Image: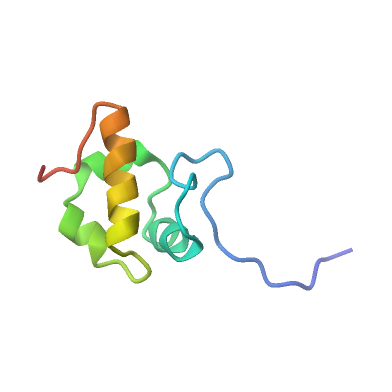
Length: 76
């Protein structure tokens, strides 16, 4: 039996990106291939901010998450 409901692409349930982020930001990161917070330490904050669905609040939350792990965006 198949489920006829469309499935929304979201980060891996165990992903560190999902905690506290709004759904549009989660989708933006997932669609860009980012599934783990550590991956964002290799990219510039400005590049992440340009993703459709990302905003200043989400970027602040990601910075905080990176900082809590002793990481930062590549340009910071």
